[in-house]
Length: 183
Image (cartoon, rainbow, N blue to C red; front, side):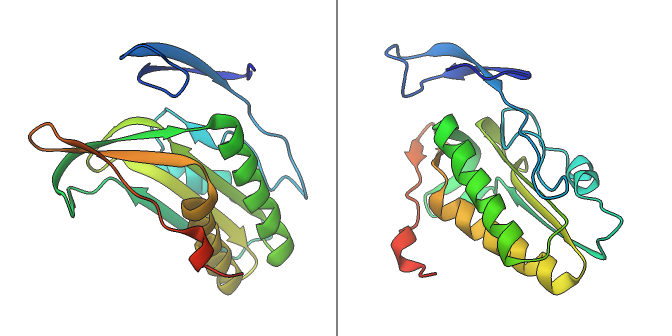
């Protein structure tokens, strides 16, 4: 399956690669609109996430509040000092899950715009790995929708991360059990 509009090249080991190291190309779809232009642009990217661009992408003249969450690669974990992270995904499923979360936000809260984007590939300490931005008429809706979105992404979207520890050790991070969060 091929996606159009924006192309990224990755190097490393992916689930569809039988070689120890390989390169592959992904062309990402810029997604369509729903409910008054709330949703736009790609959800999964290998490109750097720019906070100001995320903020500007959810501006709306009918929104009195914008809530934003940025997840960044931190320097320490339970396993030791981190020098970087690698994020991998099942692209089609990740896009579908994120679309579903956006739809839920639209129905649960009176949001005007939403932007959710997760980075994949190799990231350094301090890099933004995920961004969620929501604009709404009031702060309570914006905060609630933003918090809900990041929690749903962490639990349901098939994105895996590997910590690169000082000394050369690499460890896949175990995700949370989504069943412990009732809805």
